[in-house]
Length: 496
Image (tube, rainbow, N blue to C red):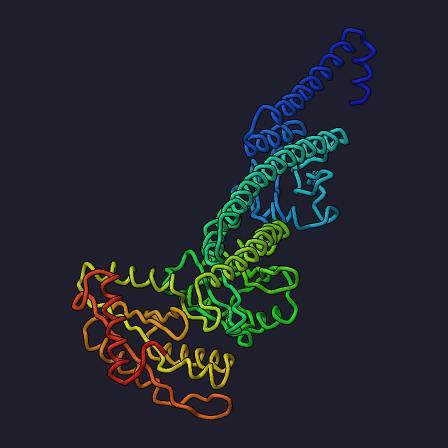
């Protein structure tokens, strides 16, 4: 063979023919390389680019079978392009190609790593029954680098797109939270925005109530609200919650159905979740609540990758700031609408509630009850035992009145020793009569004043809409008149 080639090259004409043949082959290969480089720029479809890279690489090394095996993200699904294999065989070889060290691969495989400075994606392999030339290895490695470049570009583009989408969603969340003026509104805005930032099926926001030492579900999506409206978790019922209360940390926590936290597992089973991430909402070392995201299928969607954790931490950081502001507004609003001494609704709220009760009862004609309650000779308490004792009595009166009514009713302090009760959603007059009796009986027990028990009388004026009056002002005048009639009947000087 060598002698024949030497003989040909000794003949000038033959030598030119051999050189032309080699030049033609080299030109063909260079054209293929240039075309591949052009594909990287001109074609935006990654799969078609990778398929052509693989086809041209195999042509360049003259292999009957070839395969490109990739994982574009850590532990993501396998992605491959191939020729000369059945589908099942190609998948089996792809796994072997990615999982085996290079030195363990068969000698008839010519493999090149598809990698760049960013990361390693997989391998490109050509298979033949004959050995490969060094130039073919060089060409295959060159095509592998082309594939890595295409993947780098696609990855960078996907990251940029995802980053833009996430930034837009976070910006939208920031704007939404900036307009939220209550803690409940913050919670509602969060459950609306989070599905745009995190791939999940359900979102719930839980806020910590220091007075009751409970974590309360204040908003949710993906589950009917009535099913989550009364969800509460005591501070000592859940180990993970207890740990947060002891040492508040903003790092998200992953749970699946194998968790040792019975409270979390029970909630997941109740609502069909297979994985859940709880992101604590912490501000300046204070635990404010938590954001919970869950999936009902494909638990790997919530695999706690760095990207997912960063997104959740960004959300709860905004939530913490918004909740701090909302809690301040909640406090200010509460103070503006409640009596500072007793905590009852004030006169302004009383006016709103009576208007609302009448508006709701209007279409049905169901009765609405109104009581005016006034202590008998309260001035004597202040004169004999002082204003501190008087304040203690007023607080006790407020609690006794609250104990006589339903949670749907309103007890308000109008000023001094004057109180009012609005009975809404009343089905019949018997309920109003029973409530009036309970109010009177609430004062049968004596009050402890400065260490001594003393009985205090009370006068109650009652009015029922629409029997006693059709308008709010007239209804209030009727109740007021009834109260003073009760005082006169008891022999109490109304001017006292």
